[in-house]
Length: 136
Image 1 (tube, rainbow, N blue to C red):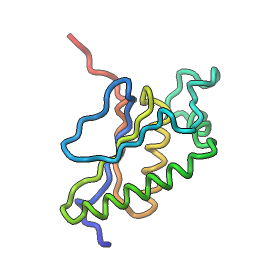
Image 2: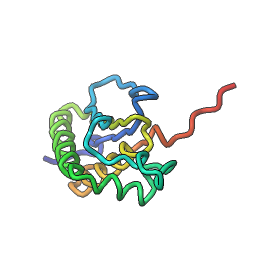
Image 3: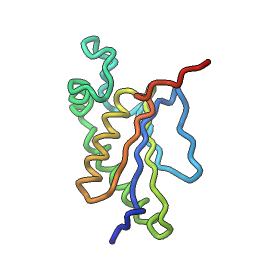
Image 4: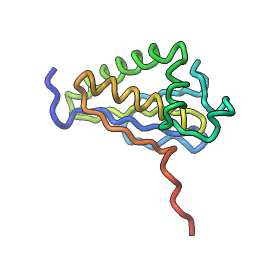
């Protein structure tokens, strides 16, 4: 399939404790709260680190089921992209964990790398890493 500049995947990571990002169209929702992934927040030495920290990334990626989860999600996102390309709709993949700062970020970045390697234009936004807007 020949993808136009319009056909691409937007990955958004978030924390369920802060709410699911709103969407006007459907999206692929990946809930990591009970996924069998190692959580850096469970390790005192990794406390306070986010999913951009090298050691936190390695900790999550060492989980036995990480690559199965990534492969399955990449295949699902590609299937949605194939379907949506007929109408030039962007595919949104929403990846959430409890706080949206560790596992979701790691998995979102890894998924983007896989999809990009497959020739699919991908963007990533990490809602849990964005500081909240100041309240007056």
